[in-house]
Image 1 (cartoon, rainbow, N blue to C red):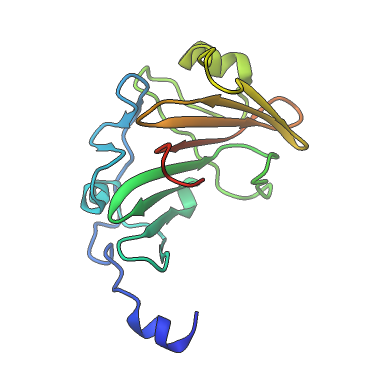
Image 2 (cartoon, rainbow, N blue to C red):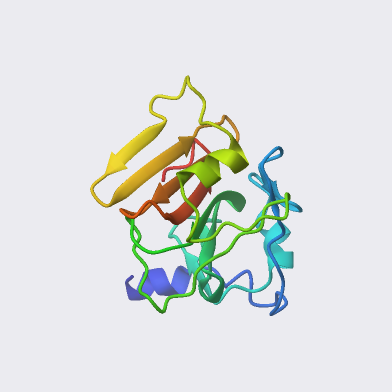
Length: 177
């Protein structure tokens, strides 16, 4: 980032947010985190609390709120919530260091997603991926992907080479991954 880019960068919109907050449980039916769903404006995330890092993504209203100590980040485009990424376990495309904080997102059923979960656990919680999706499973060099396409909020789960859950990604299908 050049000097002029830095000078034109907008102020951190989360600087006056409360230090503490919590991301509510994810409801698979509504595909939302309680008070926060895709399409909501940036201010809706205030109740999650101030992120450790708030990265401006060089376009008006585009921010990545990084909750490093909680193992996840939330992305906003044009001040709209479009993406959530949870680093849950080891391996996969986004390999974590052994001492890196890991997310354990809560589902509305009361279950937590953890790095010990396997593909069968995700299918039990979310059902079989739709048969009409292009590919139910993608195989990567470093793990397996399980995709749940949806017109409003798509989901992707990656499992490491040991078959354990590495990450969970939710995103608007029109938002580039």
